[in-house]
Structures are given as C-alpha cells and as structure tokens.
Image 1 (tube, helix red, strand yellow):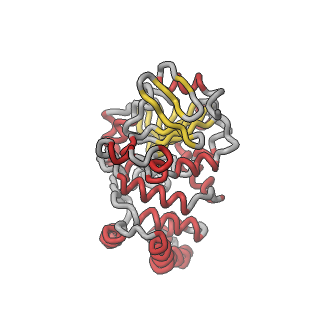
Image 2 (cartoon, rainbow, N blue to C red):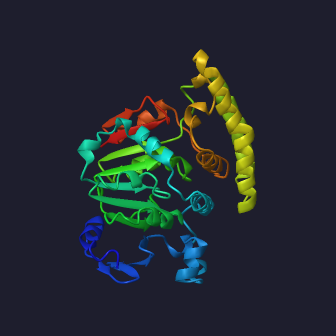
Image 3 (spheres, helix red, strand yellow):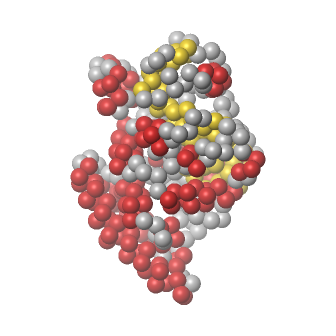
Length: 330
C-alpha cells in the first residue's frame, strides 16, 4: 500500500475525498486501477497492451475509441523501455533547462512532471521538492517508478496530460519538457490548456530553427522526409539497427565536423554539434530514436511562442539551448 500515507495528497489533487484499496483508488464514481504503485487514469481503450492484458483483455475492445494517439503512446513506451537508464549527462541537461528558474523559490513546493518518461528530470528534483507528481501515458511510467524507487514523496500516474481529473492548480510548479510538440493537437493550444495545472511552468518546445542559418532548415526538411517514412517501422530489431545507422552516418559526422570548426569559432554553425558535443553514444542514439520514429513533430519560432502572452502574464525565454525552453507564469 504505497499510497497509504499519501491519502491527504491524493485528496488534495482531486479536491475531494478518495477511497484507497490494495489495487484501486475510488474517487466519487470513478475507479482507478493501481498497478505496481502506478495509478491508471486512462480509459480502458487507451491502455497499452501489457496493461490491458493485466486488467481485462476484453475491456479495451469493448470501450469507446481512444482519445489519444496510440502510435505515439507505443513509440515513447518502446523508446523508454529501451533507454531506461538515467545517464550522467541527464543532470547537466536538466540544469540547462533550469537556467531561467529560481530553484530556491521552488524548494519545498509540489512539482509536477508532465510527460515524465522514465523520470529522468524528476530524479534530480526529488530531494528539493515537497511532493512530486509524475504523469505519462505510456509504459515509461513504470520505468519512472523504478528509477525513483527511493523517492517516497513521488506519486505516479498513467494518464493523458490533456485530460487530468485533478483540481485547478493541483501543483505549485510544472515542467513539460519535450512533450507538447508530439501531441496530435497544436502544441501552443496544449500549453494554454496545461496552464490550469500550476501557476508557474517550465516548457520546452522544438524550435523552428529561427535563430539558425537557412541551411539548418534545409537539412531539417530532408530529415523530416526521412522521418515520415521511418516512423512506420515497428520492429524493435529494425528500429535498433536504424538508430545505430543514422547515428553513425548522420549525427556523428556533423558532431565531429563541429569539433574541427571550433578553432575558427564556427562550431555553432554546424548542425547537431551544439546539442550533442560531449554526449555518450547511448544518449545520442536515444535522441535518434526519438527523432525518427515519432509521427508528430511540431516546431515553433520564438515569436509564435510569445503569443502565449494571452494566457501567461510572464514568459521568459532562455538564450541558451535547447531552443526554445521558457518559463511562464500566469
């Protein structure tokens, strides 16, 4: 009964009484299964196959059509089951995201990690936050549970971040890093929607290469065409082989060229080098997998993101990569 000492937190999330059982949580008329300390918020038709098999093999077939992009759910579930380890460079990456956040002011607050994956960002704040709410719609949430097994202040939910049953402002601070641009709705509209979850948020959306030379966009166009063919590949073995091939033939040559350009001050003008210099092969391969086997990839310019000022009274962009990550306050 992992949640036995967390009833007050659960009731505060929903803003109403809850009833906890060994294998389920009851909130009003809603029953949410609990598997391996993960509370399942998804509808039965949205369960990944392994969860449907454990709960009810017939449930998913009898329910209404899923409201989520199940191919995206599959891709990220497969990605994070394959790349399940929190790597040393993840800490430096997370610190890069936090360059525009006053961490001292957020110490002892309730954090929410929207689209948490394996919990690679939550892992580095588990000791400074009061409570940590992790949410993901794929099987990665079970990997996050394992990676944060020593964090007794963490709560784990398998759910769609666009349809959470929680009260308004259920968290003090929310992070949503590299998630919204993979949803089947406009990512800016999604950012407006999640504004109700916490008064302060840190968001990262893929940039439209608006601060880079034009040949970056030419290369992106070619990569996009390739991605539109490769995302249909489902074979784990073939995905593994292709991710290695693309890393060796596309990513590593550009990264190496950037090193050669450094003495001349041109490294920032070489695609991929700025983001991947010094990173391990495993970390680069994971990003290759992320890039080429995902159907949906939205990109936005800084100017487009700034239109979120109709929802947030403060938007603060980082001038450093990854572009664009920004802090916003309602």
